[in-house]
Amino acid sequence: MDFLSRFYGDTIIFKPKNVLLDELGTIRFKRELMTALGKGEIKRIIINLSTVKMTDSTGLAALLFARRYSLGKEGECILVFPSAKILNQLKLSKLTPSFKIIEKEDEYLALKKELEESLNIPLPSEEEEEEQEELAEEEDNGQDKLIFTGTEETAVPTDEDFSFEE
Image 1: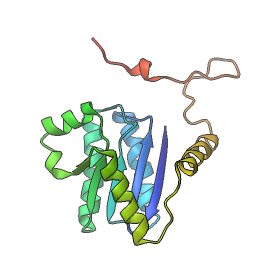
Image 2: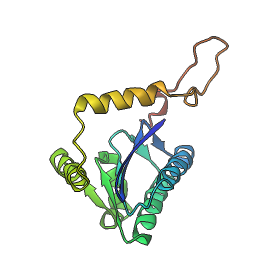
Image 3: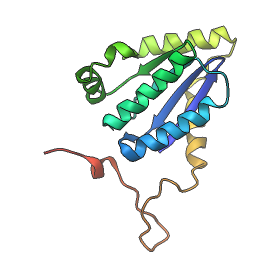
Image 4: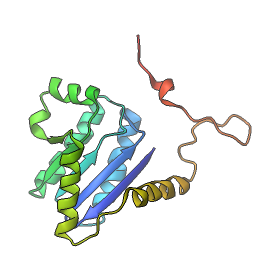
């Protein structure tokens, strides 16, 4: 479970990677988000949900927490690329009006470009973004290695371990 954050003045793009926003994942999500928010005067929170596969009520509560925080600063909370399951949960919970939701790549790229132009920051190339993500993976201190099997290699749960198909 990794969390990437990028700051653009009073805006943060927060991207959880390979996270299940269940009870345990939500605790880590909120802790990492609060840490990131503590690094500056943030008004607008953009949460990229592209790799979040599942959420439950605690995950929805964490998203509402981010919304309340941004509204308290007279900002907004934007959800980017929520999966169909998450979008459906937001609709069933009648929370879609609470967030600005971006589902199209071109809208998201336009938003990022606007942010970067407002601060005169050059747009990073795809290679630079991939490089940054690889560095984040290399900095892993083993927190994601959940099960010790008695050998040097650790067993890490995969998405298949958390499937809820009937």
